Length: 304
Image (cartoon, rainbow, N blue to C red; front, side, top):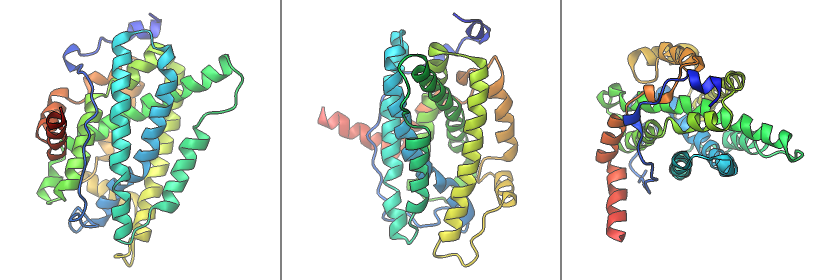
């Protein structure tokens, strides 16, 4: 065990759970374009997930299939295989929202083409000599995924507790998609970080890739929100602003700016472990009541 690993606290043992993909499906026929009533800005800020996640999570799967030969711990290998299955399902579920947006006059293709380029070209496989250069690039991407997963778990924990969305009567199908996905992000929140520690664990690499991931997420998210607001056919003056984001965060419709800022030193702390954030018990409880997840389990049980 490296010195870096030795300084880390032990994960919360009770938080570990066997991971399995749930073959969910959603019907979007009755979901309005502005699924948070009267709030297109918050709707479109969250809608950016549908643009980023399909390409991003397919990229996760691609990278993790390459890292499997480096995994020497059997439980971690099983966790990574379960993670791959869940992420593939997340990509599919969010991808299926895009035709619904097109039907309502909002074509995301110009933006998703840029996101696809980012993950397939900029962060994709490179023609490198075998040995150290090729392994270096693989480890960089594994560390980047760990940083991104810190924020997907942060968002998952937020949406599971975002009662304001219920008070504002947000569309129940969209809420179920977001909370099913968020619950699984909380469920598997430790896998990416533990994999990074297992195959590398360099603190300098953790900081460097966090900076890259955080900067890219902020840039892509604000760009995606601006794209949606500018191209929404129902808006005459579609604008996105930092002020609007801060106000919605204070109202509880979006994550608060303060909570996002406080998440930074937690990840950069040498004592960080994802199991200390969020609650597996809460995630599992939601998955046991989620309409999409319970329907998927019923189909699987019936098929068996």
